Image (cartoon, rainbow, N blue to C red; front, top):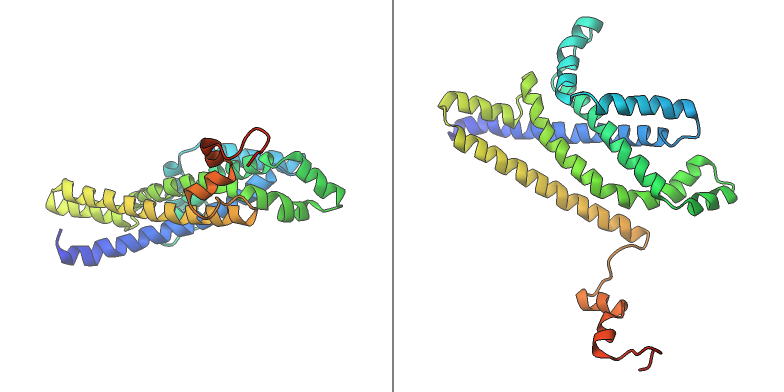
Length: 246
């Protein structure tokens, strides 16, 4: 791969991939909470409508939906999407449906006693969500959100099929010019791995901070400090007996 091609096609393609990833993730995050909260709403009508959305997008292909937005919507509704909007909409709406199940499951995992305490304090539903349920559910959402974000990153390669010049599009173009697949696709795999690794490290940092806010952070002071807190070292060395003898 020549430097001129890398500079003119591949670097802009990497930037487009980054933009599609973060824009789609932002849309998916909003949809996840809207649909996830709707599926736990007191109103049966809201639950049914959000459930229909979830089943619809879970059961359809994101690639076909992307084609539908890019090529069918302009003919049916006279609405043309500019640039990568079709790809961002298709990915964000589809992965947002998957994310709504994460939100719903995490909220339902909050102990019922916590919700009952909020009701006893005469909190509204919004107050219970903001002060009790979401703060406890948020750390449990982050690991599956991390996996979903990685899947979304890999799914951004689909936008190359609607002529969005991301890095996969640039790689395919280079392969057609040079007829040499190995270095192009090896480089693409490496870049996707680096992006996924960086996103994972960022999400794990966010998870540790979220757990620290509700008192679930791992003990500071290293491995032996944590073991001593659980009594493991004392049990091994015999410094704590059955009756707690010193």
